[in-house]
Length: 211
Image (cartoon, rainbow, N blue to C red; front, side, top):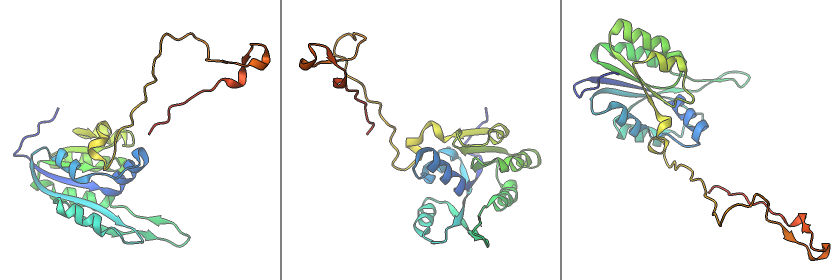
């Protein structure tokens, strides 16, 4: 178990695309980046917090950038590359790694907010050559197992989605009313036209539909 104390200097590096798509695929909701940064920091000294963003072709991310900046998170942007034939590419893996290595002499802990296994070499480099502890924050259900195992501490956002996702509410399972002991047989209606025999078409099955 690692030690976190208030005098630790911390650098936070946010792989925005990875976290956004993980939350969307797993829960269908957007990420509350400010809350994640707050809890990952855990009261320590923040040196820099940087979010790496790929701008879309529509270029409508201004409101998102302003929200991040308002919460003390810097943004670095890169345009989405579109190649002939329709192929698209956009990632900040190298840029994030360079910033983390550059900032390493000025921090005691690096927090990588991503589940991308491509960051395993970066985690190992920071631990061995910079001598700092490396923490990872992501959704365990979609994060690389090697990344989870290589870091000094892992914060699993899957355990508390209502806290880290905007507008998320856990589904409540409906409870069926119990009106006496079950008989083990379906509730069948009597068909007067069939001489008192049960009418098979009168059996209905109701299913609870989650709200």
